[in-house]
Length: 304
Image (cartoon, rainbow, N blue to C red; front, top):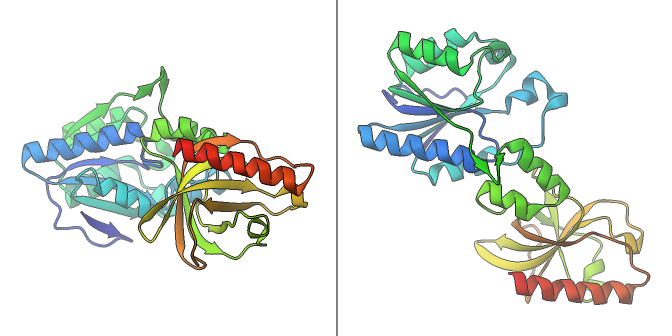
């Protein structure tokens, strides 16, 4: 897959099957659209394109309403590539771009620049100034300019529409198993391993303190998880919180990697959440905390 960023010319792309949208989270509903575009392009003997935006439009037009992102652009690209897409376009989203009239965008980008053959969008798709570009508007322009528009119905699971907002709410609650069911994969956060207060080491459960770079972090609590370090997938017990037993105030993300020894300070780590084990709480003594961590570790082993 070839990726175009920051206005890089993509004149080589002609007559593709294309989808466009934010695709934050790349959940099961998004995957359905992207798979269809990939399959359709192959069937027509042409190329497939995902056209998305960076940064997220709300970060530009209404920063106070902008939600924490489920995926950064790097991970979004990696996942989109896994569905067999030929080209990924990250359009630089600016206030000027936001002011573009729907007709101008369709004529200039979709028709003149890309000469799209087909455009596939989700049921709730809208674009252009004031989100005036509805699905009906896109269909009318497609009919006028010579390309077809197809709309994928809402994807439902358990009777409810799968959406990025629902997934964000679940993650914030710590319901990582429920979020995974809608994402089609375990949710993850990443960053570098940084030095902490070494409390875990003192009580016999050394931890890797994660300097989190991801925008969305699950609720405080203890989780069964996998830590990915230099390509190795390692089972872990993850704690998110302030270490109340020791009077902590700063929120930390710490992973006790099972049966692991080694110096990983400064290395990049990604943590995949599998199951929430319990809430974070203050214990009456250090010994009581140690006993509970031992129980957490055994539960995590059984799960992982």
